[in-house]
Length: 319
Image (cartoon, rainbow, N blue to C red):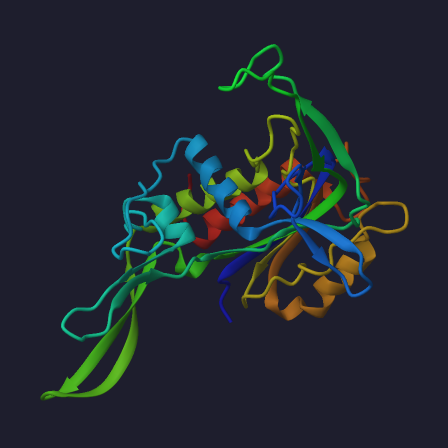
């Protein structure tokens, strides 16, 4: 087995926030996204789409050109990017899809790149308790509407939550900067075989730069949504990471808190032991201002530096 991916499960701590909006049930209440457990309790979450958007925006903020968005190739299709993983880092890391309608009775085609960056939603470990932020918009005070009537204050409420959130990403190192194409083998006009061939889009130096940019974006993760009134930091404060020989987010369900609200390191050690033959290297890194640093943990700075070293070593580059 060859090393081919990095999986990272992380914890973010939020004191008070309304991270990801959901559909409105009542006109004057702004809800947050929640998943309902079997016992009826609800866990707030930030969708994987929102996390991917935040990571893309952060990569742009860090100075990398992002693929421009344009109109879909079909009338009712979703907007598309430039579909150029050679030129644009986000088309490479996050993939794309653009469907094209067929003509003269022929079926349509599509340009598809499956994302080599896999992203799980950011899920709260603490249930939603029904907390609401009460607010009133007085912007219209002293003004009148088109009929001459005084504009009344707009009263509204927003669902808020406090707690620790858990997220996971998996980076397919062996697919960054690579495009797989089907190559047909013919004997005369007959197709006798179809082989999947890997096409190198960029060199290893560029591959490493792109993954390192993603790691930086994850370390400084910040979502711009609902931050005007509820400024929140969703960057990792604890990280369980592994350089793997087989693709699986092994820590996805295993990073939990103990009864004291600290990371359950003993449980994580059992996971590392269970998957030992599939793990090249692993680490547990913590920001001591948020969680207790136990034996077997390193600082968050050391953790991200180690992950960067894994990336450089995998691609055999020095940056």
